[in-house]
Length: 263
Ligand SMILES: Nc1ncnc2c1ncn2[C@@H]1O[C@H](COP(=O)(O)OP(=O)(O)OP(=O)(O)O)[C@@H](O)[C@H]1O
Image (tube, rainbow, N blue to C red; front, side, top):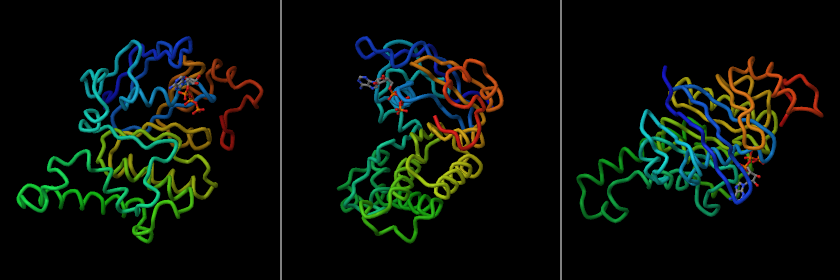
């Protein structure tokens, strides 16, 4: 399959800091793609450029052949790009169900108030809306906690709800910023399985930022490696693992890039 996202010479400067420096790569439709690199390498900045939170200083971003570089975040959401945040962006006092429902509000054409007045369009939309939310709750196995306030849940489950909120937007491209941060081994395995199912069952293209290289190497079809804002590696897990520049950037660690190692 061809590329769904093409990043071309993207730079992002904050004053003198080059968070991204002429970075290019493309992501194939339907694949699991990972962005890796040390702290401060520019991974989150790249996701921000893709989701529209930041505007690149220069360069372009094409989604399904269309230049989206100047589009607002909500316009990108409408095109099928959704994002789960590194720091959970949920409403702690609201239930799991309501948080996931809220994720879909940006997509609803009928306003919040039209439901009670104009039955036709609003009700059809409301049914679709509800069906998708239920599908996500089932997919991420959140049935038992659907009515629990998110703030009362363990961190790992909150991360799963955060992913659910993005998934409820029915994205073709989902951006997951460290969805496994702070999780134990069993929780990571579970999240890995959900990511694999997003790819295999939902046919969603997944862009993942993850520090656990074991997870990255086993899940990803392709990987881009950033260091100080520059792309220092790109390819399959095998290619990246054997790339001398990547190994060099990994100095101070064992030079074998394997499971259990983090970056
Ligand atoms: N809004 C901002 N204002 C100023 N500098 C920023 C801003 N956002 C990011 N940076 C800087 O850009 C660089 C890249 O940061 P970024 O958060 O993208 O890295 P990262 O690879 O995601 O790191 P981490 O793994 O720690 O999340 C860092 O030097 C950071 O301090």
